Length: 418
Image (tube, rainbow, N blue to C red; front, side, top):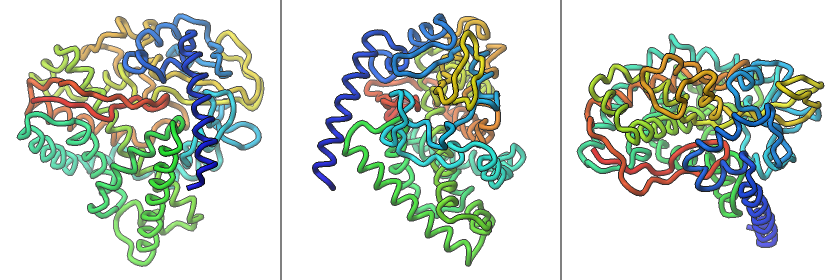
């Protein structure tokens, strides 16, 4: 470690945190999503954004849209891209400047525009079609039932550690063709990378992130090399057989692995928390576990795992009440869009019978619509049905910990009792 570098980094992060807290206290809704009490309950922030001008000019230097209509338009409009004209990244957009410190993770094709995005997405898209994902249902059911049965025997457990994380880890590892013995490492790496999404908070966190990314890339590089000589019927073998850049292929595999379980784990935790907090939805699901698919869609609307997505135009584009200049960063607040009263009546109520529950943007839209959406829906539906069937009186206990991330709205710990 470079002590001088770490001291300078710590001082810089302290200044950034102090500035962010000051702007949050002054009322900036974007920064409020990083601080308590708003990080735990963003209802007032959603309302502030939805009632404000569209786009809203944050003091961070970015524009923000929150209504369902404008967020939908932004993610579908191909004039809005994920890279500025100089080819850099939109990392650090909340600070109003492109900063690798605030976007330290290589997100592969998520951070690319066509034609590179099209090429890489096409390379793996066939492995995530609804038909292909459906074939994994017996595996998902078997894994979910085993995990839930193990958890219910303990009566009190951390839902994140017992079910929400190990289930999607096991499924995406199976799809990729990663040996089972690496599952525990995936969860650890996922926590480190998840903590870095939206920016690191300390020099120690940056070191942990660098180590996790290095270990993950090293493992995937070794596995891809093996698959070139000894292929199997899995996604890593498929990637190894392509005539593609090695580092690019490793980045793509890492993205699929981490995105394949971190957001699904978040979805499961958010769904259980929302339904058990309100109590009535969980009781209804327990009475009819076949409604798990409805619960998944309502949870995606009510508490979207990904808070926002960023875009920028390469030309002046009209959006809502403003003309957006080239390279201006615009955030589509996907979580707020799910609470737009123009689309969802009583948006702050979790309603299994909501007629518009599926009209959300939790998986984004347009060419960047989540590739793994069918798999996430399957895993969440099966897990929620198993939990509701075996634990009809499931309820939260004290000690829940929310992750402090502007991008990912998730639980680090969610203690529950059966």
